Amino acid sequence: QVQLVESGGGLVQAGGSLRLSCAASGRTFSTYAMGWFRQAPGKEREFVARISWSGSTYYADSVKGRFTISRDNAKNMVYLQMNSLKPEDTAVYYCAAGVSGSTVKSYAYWGQGTQVTVSS
Image (cartoon, rainbow, N blue to C red; front, side, top):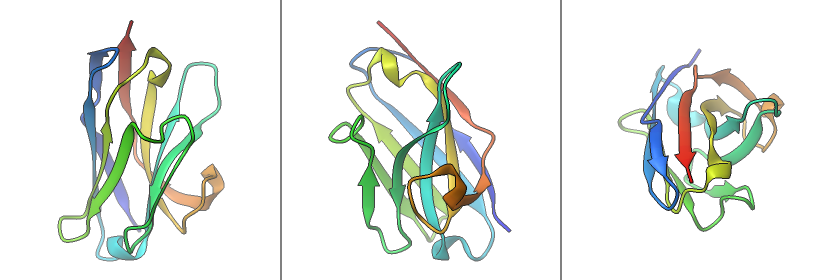
């Protein structure tokens, strides 16, 4: 069982940066792949980035080169550094733990989400 709590969302101007954090509970955190997803109003939840237990990363094309996912297994933390933010990045961002992959079904545990709003 893993519990996830996101933080770090907020309002930022286009071109700005935010760093999202995800705090995980559970002694098996380091064995899970971790992902970030986002959901804009009226749209389906979409994959943003993932990181394996060993640190391998993968990104959606829409954020590649602007976002960086990282993890600290000693602290049970996952991060999403978001640079050069665009208005289309506005969404609720969710942290998830699972067996890896880029689909919602690949992840069994989810946080409550944190709102990111990018103004133009």
